[in-house]
Image (tube, rainbow, N blue to C red; front, side, top):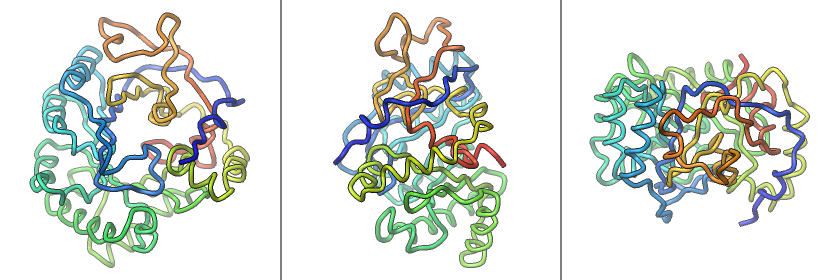
Length: 319
């Protein structure tokens, strides 16, 4: 697979600094039951990297020490980590808001038959990938059968209160090298189409720009579209989005416990830079170590977060 990393390291992206910490985004490993075309993590069924119990305990200690508001769990399929449920339970006991970035189809994997009930019981917020409301677009990105299983999963979640009193967000990614449409109008389309066809409900739609890294980056290079896509991102740069970039208030932790400014830097192996350590581990943050004001490591991929309406793990940055 061709790698865009060398092309992304040199950049003129504006210098930015970290603010206060309110979200800890933790990648529990690259194991996944799907292999999606747009996946910037290159996750799949053959990946073996999974966060161990010792690192999970360090995550919980950091949450408690810093009173972090949000624990955002991602992967791969984070639910396939054997310590997922322990981490969720303990975080909820701390009063932490927990987000599960769920691919929906994992609800039907062997051993996960009661996963939906567990998430509802713990009042976990679900942010679920559904790249389009049309079957052909979803299966082009995620594989045959994924759309029907996703719809079945949402209907099951609806019966447990998701889409009403429990938060269920859906995530849209463009099929190709284009910017997402306006989030608010696309949400109305999703609600109309999914409601009419399947009588299903969700609370909010997030539109997320495809990042030119890992699997999607390799596709851009192989199809000769990388240069044009980067030009599209740069030409649509919005200075207004810089102030609300997610990296300003979030830390990203990889499956081994190393610390990054964001999930995309994690995938590009661009760790947080501090003066006395070449690579920062979660253990180094204990005891009151503060990163506020630390420069954020940037690259050309950062234009993906600031293009047009902007993009973050919580959807568009601008209304």
